[in-house]
Length: 210
Image (cartoon, rainbow, N blue to C red; front, top):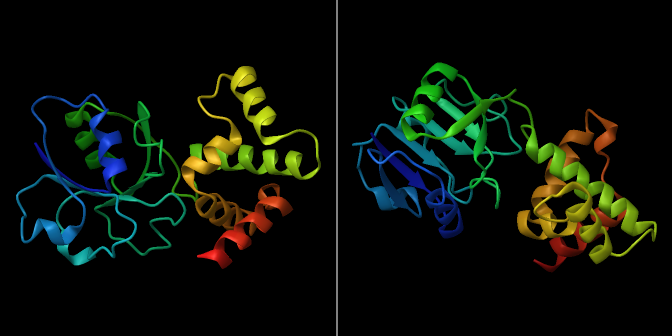
């Protein structure tokens, strides 16, 4: 099986850390334009969020896009598309979460790759990103209320829950913009995800400086 992966350097590094079946040939590219007219592949992982994807170019192959926040339905994508979370740190996880219009075909692709997959509802944040974002949000509530410092909160979470990163370490790794956008979207229908005032303040300060 031949698979094309359009991804940035960090995403490519995470993909290469995964245990992939030896009979799978992977072709890496930073942008879709680097591929030219290459149509010799069985599936494509289109993880570069900074480049517009031409839906018509991939109408007959399984396509897996990096879309942690926007759903397949919201993006009006065709039936050969599936979505994953390509945020930093999530691609090297042993099991990927996938929302897909065709679970049968997507499942076969992942079986050939030798990667573990769990299918989830096509909702904003899938599952893990929702959980991590809410943990980060609660940490910002605690920090804003003066309960503890960033360093102490990170240390408490790592020692108490055996998480690889503390909430603020996660926030720095994932990107504040991603966390804010997901929480803001989720809070429109579920007030449990209302953005912490300090997180929102930091987000607008960051946005104004860009």
